[in-house]
Length: 182
Image: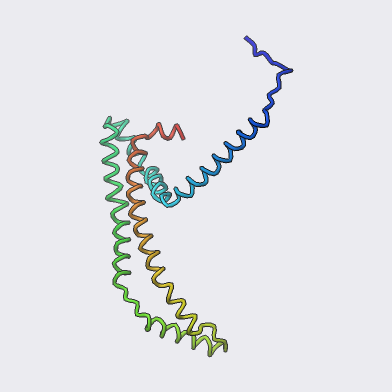
């Protein structure tokens, strides 16, 4: 049976239909932007899960297809392996870094004295004092913000590790179906 072609049939949209079409496209673009913007903090966990999945996918296929293990048991075993080999050493390095930062005692007067000494050396070489006392005092105001940023990054790391484990489990369970879908 052949397809019938209707040469006189024109698909024209009314002004109202065009308005709804472009409004829907605009709404979808705005929602996509909002979702992507809110998704950014969790992107590290998802990218980490994808990376580890690529590293261990052949093990998963071996356990499920050759050894005939169940997907859940195989995924839990590989997840345990990933935690022991990747996440515990990485988390240990982060906590070591945190403990070193916590032991760091910043005495503002010592910091100012060191910076003033460097400023005097630069002034004697160049002849221009670009680090005045008021500039140094304002720079010291940023130290608490830097500490807050580091602690926020560490809590973000913990959240990303939890997301990594969860997403990796479901990626391992999905396996070939997920890959075919993508």
